[in-house]
Image 1 (cartoon, rainbow, N blue to C red):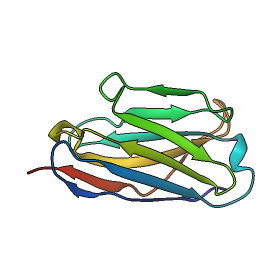
Image 2 (cartoon, rainbow, N blue to C red):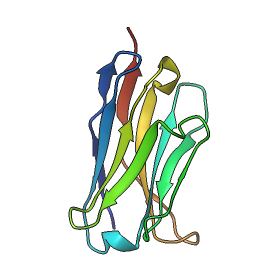
Image 3 (cartoon, rainbow, N blue to C red):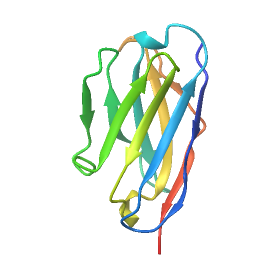
Image 4 (spheres, one colour):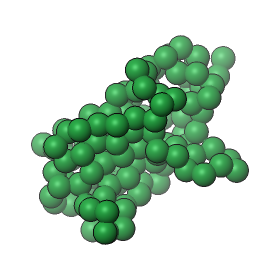
Amino acid sequence: QVQLVESGGGLVQPGGALRLSCAASGSRFNIYAMAWYRQTPGKQRELVAAISPGGNTNYADSVKGRFTISRDNAKNTVYLQMNSLNPGDTAVYYCNARASISTSPYWGQGTQVTVSS
Protein backbone atom coordinates (compact mmCIF):
# COMPACT_ATOMS: atom_id res chain seq x y z
CA GLN A 1 0.00 0.00 0.00
CA VAL A 2 1.30 3.44 -0.95
CA GLN A 3 -0.09 6.78 0.13
CA LEU A 4 0.76 9.85 -1.90
CA VAL A 5 0.51 13.43 -0.65
CA GLU A 6 0.98 16.32 -3.06
CA SER A 7 1.95 19.85 -2.10
CA GLY A 8 3.21 23.04 -3.71
CA GLY A 9 0.20 24.13 -5.72
CA GLY A 10 -1.18 27.63 -5.67
CA LEU A 11 -1.84 30.78 -7.63
CA VAL A 12 0.92 32.10 -9.89
CA GLN A 13 1.08 34.76 -12.58
CA PRO A 14 1.73 33.87 -16.22
CA GLY A 15 5.42 33.35 -16.78
CA GLY A 16 5.94 32.29 -13.19
CA ALA A 17 7.12 29.03 -11.71
CA LEU A 18 6.01 26.47 -9.13
CA ARG A 19 7.46 23.26 -7.80
CA LEU A 20 5.12 20.46 -6.88
CA SER A 21 6.14 17.73 -4.47
CA CYS A 22 4.67 14.30 -3.92
CA ALA A 23 5.69 12.44 -0.80
CA ALA A 24 5.11 8.70 -0.75
CA SER A 25 4.62 6.56 2.32
CA GLY A 26 5.54 2.94 2.51
CA SER A 27 8.62 1.08 1.49
CA ARG A 28 10.20 0.28 -1.85
CA PHE A 29 9.55 3.71 -3.35
CA ASN A 30 12.45 3.10 -5.71
CA ILE A 31 10.59 0.35 -7.60
CA TYR A 32 7.68 2.59 -8.59
CA ALA A 33 7.30 4.46 -11.81
CA MET A 34 6.08 7.90 -10.82
CA ALA A 35 4.06 10.37 -12.81
CA TRP A 36 2.20 13.63 -12.69
CA TYR A 37 -1.21 13.99 -14.31
CA ARG A 38 -3.52 16.97 -14.51
CA GLN A 39 -7.22 17.46 -14.98
CA THR A 40 -9.55 20.36 -15.69
CA PRO A 41 -13.34 20.29 -15.30
CA GLY A 42 -15.06 18.32 -18.04
CA LYS A 43 -11.84 16.88 -19.42
CA GLN A 44 -10.04 13.59 -19.00
CA ARG A 45 -7.03 13.36 -16.78
CA GLU A 46 -3.91 13.72 -18.90
CA LEU A 47 -0.32 12.65 -18.39
CA VAL A 48 2.04 15.56 -17.84
CA ALA A 49 5.34 13.85 -17.03
CA ALA A 50 6.64 10.48 -15.90
CA ILE A 51 9.85 9.08 -14.48
CA SER A 52 10.87 5.44 -14.36
CA PRO A 53 12.58 3.74 -11.42
CA GLY A 54 15.83 4.16 -13.33
CA GLY A 55 15.28 7.86 -13.94
CA ASN A 56 14.12 7.86 -17.54
CA THR A 57 11.64 10.64 -18.19
CA ASN A 58 8.97 11.52 -20.69
CA TYR A 59 6.77 14.56 -21.08
CA ALA A 60 3.60 15.69 -22.75
CA ASP A 61 4.39 17.81 -25.80
CA SER A 62 2.64 20.78 -24.22
CA VAL A 63 5.12 20.95 -21.33
CA LYS A 64 8.39 19.89 -22.94
CA GLY A 65 11.14 22.39 -22.25
CA ARG A 66 9.14 24.00 -19.43
CA PHE A 67 8.52 21.25 -16.88
CA THR A 68 11.02 18.91 -15.26
CA ILE A 69 10.18 15.78 -13.31
CA SER A 70 12.68 14.36 -10.84
CA ARG A 71 12.77 11.94 -7.94
CA ASP A 72 14.66 11.60 -4.70
CA ASN A 73 14.48 7.97 -3.63
CA ALA A 74 16.12 8.75 -0.29
CA LYS A 75 13.22 11.06 0.53
CA ASN A 76 10.48 8.99 -1.14
CA THR A 77 9.53 12.09 -3.09
CA VAL A 78 8.91 13.03 -6.69
CA TYR A 79 8.95 16.63 -7.90
CA LEU A 80 7.57 18.59 -10.80
CA GLN A 81 9.35 21.85 -11.51
CA MET A 82 7.07 23.99 -13.65
CA ASN A 83 8.50 27.06 -15.38
CA SER A 84 7.07 29.57 -17.84
CA LEU A 85 3.56 28.77 -16.68
CA ASN A 86 0.63 29.90 -18.74
CA PRO A 87 -3.15 29.89 -18.12
CA GLY A 88 -3.43 26.65 -20.08
CA ASP A 89 -1.51 24.92 -17.27
CA THR A 90 -4.31 25.65 -14.80
CA ALA A 91 -5.55 22.32 -13.47
CA VAL A 92 -5.60 19.98 -10.52
CA TYR A 93 -2.32 18.08 -10.57
CA TYR A 94 -2.23 14.49 -9.36
CA CYS A 95 0.67 12.29 -8.40
CA ASN A 96 0.63 8.68 -9.57
CA ALA A 97 2.69 5.66 -8.56
CA ARG A 98 2.71 2.34 -10.32
CA ALA A 99 4.80 -0.75 -9.65
CA SER A 100 4.15 -2.35 -13.03
CA ILE A 101 1.71 -2.22 -15.94
CA SER A 102 -0.12 -5.21 -14.49
CA THR A 103 -0.83 -3.53 -11.13
CA SER A 104 -3.28 -0.80 -10.26
CA PRO A 105 -1.78 2.64 -9.75
CA TYR A 106 -1.95 4.71 -6.60
CA TRP A 107 -3.16 8.31 -6.71
CA GLY A 108 -2.74 11.32 -4.53
CA GLN A 109 -5.57 13.68 -3.61
CA GLY A 110 -4.45 16.38 -6.03
CA THR A 111 -3.19 19.93 -5.71
CA GLN A 112 -4.66 22.94 -7.50
CA VAL A 113 -2.47 25.03 -9.77
CA THR A 114 -3.96 28.28 -11.05
CA VAL A 115 -2.12 30.49 -13.51
CA SER A 116 -3.75 33.89 -13.72
CA SER A 117 -2.93 37.57 -13.63
